[in-house]
Image (tube, rainbow, N blue to C red; front, side):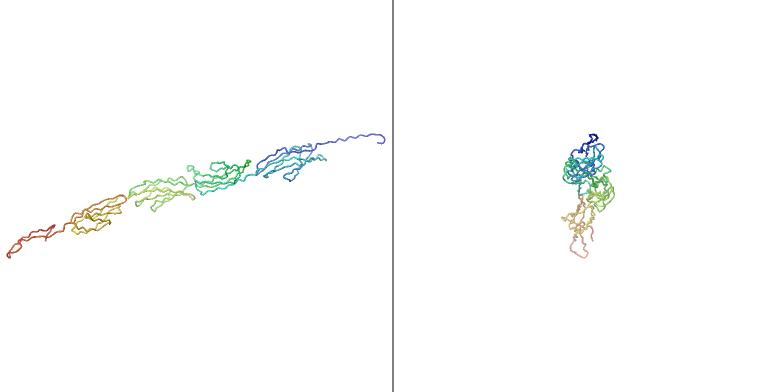
Amino acid sequence: DANGCVGIDTVELDVMEPPFAEFLTSDGAWCQTADNQSTAEILIDGSENSTFELILEVQGIRDTLVNLSNGTVPILLNNEAGLNQYNLVKIIEYHGNNTCETELFDTLNMEVHPMPVAQFTASYDDLCSPVEVEFESVEGYSMYTWDFGDGNLQMTPNMLVSHTYHFDYNDVFQRTDTVYHIQLIVETDFGCTNLLSDSIIIYPTPVADFFVNPVVQDFPDSEIELINLSSPGNWSYYWNFGDGNSDSQKDPEQHTYENWGLYDVELLTFSPYCRDSISKQIQITPPPPQAIFEPDTSGCPPLDVTFKNQSVYADSYVWNFDDGSYSTEASPTHKFWQSKAHQVELVAYGLSGTDTAKQIILVHPSPKALFEAYPREAKNLKQVFKFLNNSLDGNRFL
């Protein structure tokens, strides 16, 4: 002071290093997810007893993180597809009543690859197995992984695939309507995946078959034996025997035909959705024809004879009257002029062959009356005459 006295005072100053912050996480990329949990770490370097505020700019929008401590701080990263940029702008340190701040210039770049869109359509012309189904997804992905729901998988770079569904009829679980759960996983060039599940229903198709015996038999035998050999399943059945008769039993066992002929026996095996049928031909042959006719008669010429045809299993006839005349009528009438034993022949024709019957029609010679008298003139009233019978083909005389 003015008197030359000197006073000394001491003040201690605590000079702190300016705060600092930086990203510990390196630039990177990941696939967009439905539930994003991706984080990045920021290192805050400052005094132990300080609190900090951090100004962060994300995609041009600033946000302030408050009440932070010294050390590492996690931040949740955006899940928006594309390049997401995170800029550290400023850090502010609060130490008692004092504040320090530092401008920051650290940037984190995170690329979020978009989640692929998993979708597909299933196209098929029928609901009955075997069914070829065409599956079509959307283009633009590197890999498509298909689970067809029947134990078969396929990985392909093509968005269009086809798959055929078959039923194993030895598997009791595949004898009924089956729901197949289809799953598609699509993958991008960056390894991003997405999944879609859907289902289709396929109905089993029966395989109709049966055994018939005998295939050929001769009438009057006309009964056939039937055994249903259709594939196992809860089917309905319809039998058409080809003669106007039908049956809906699974196993009708036998059927009897009333007449001979060719018959197509058909079995329809079906469900409300699917069906199959099979037809087999059987033949019941007619018996061989039997040529029979009457009468066996005789008479004098001209002799009219009406023949009664009693043939069976025949449908056409030829008559030979042994006088150069013929007829194709079933029961003709014929006039015989010649006196002789006519061997009349009937040939009966049927589906199973021919048969011949022969009978004698005897036409007797017509008698001729002739006689001579001796003498021819009477010499007196007491003349005696002798008569000589010279008649031909006669056996009674008056």
